[in-house]
Structure formats: structure tokens, C-alpha cells
Length: 109
Image 1 (cartoon, one colour):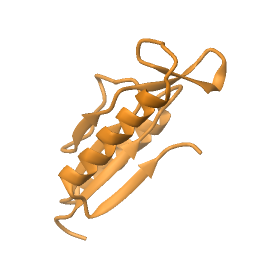
Image 2: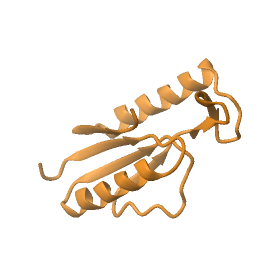
Image 3: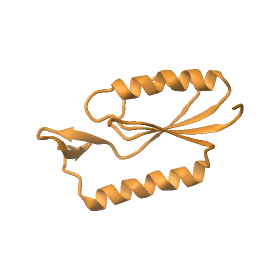
């Protein structure tokens, strides 16, 4: 594939391992001539090196002190269904706007 656009969604909740792995892939993909849009769903990481990829930051989601079922926003407030729906709408709107050729997802599980 040459000259295509990749929509690369990355969700990190605790650390930045998933984001770092995605960054390495993005640097290689853009060096190979692809356009890469990185959509991050975790807490922003200002020092992240994505090469020529373009970063889009969603409202950040992270794990709270009570574990995986305690999802929090960047201000450490529990997220509710309205928050989740707004974030989903933003993500789908961005997908429609960017019109990618490929959807790539990095998340666990």
C-alpha cells in the first residue's frame, strides 16, 4: 500500500507501553510513505515521538484506584454514560472526517 491513510486508535489506561509501541509503528509507517492519524484515548504524553504522524487527542480515559472497572477522566472523575457517548461521537466524527483506508487498533485486551 502506498499513499494510503491509516487511522490508528491507541488506548492506554495505566502506563504508556501501548502508546510507545504505537509510536514506533507510526514512525515506520510514515517513513514508508503512509499518512498516519494517531488517535490517543489515554492521558496526553507531551514527549511522544510519532515521526510524521498526526496526533488527535480524545478526552483522556484512565484506570482509577479501584481497578479496571473504575474508569476516570483526566481530572480523576468517574466517567458516566454521557461522557462515554460524547467521546464515542468525537471518535466516529473524526473517523468520518479523515476517511482512512485502514483502521488499526492498539488496545488491551
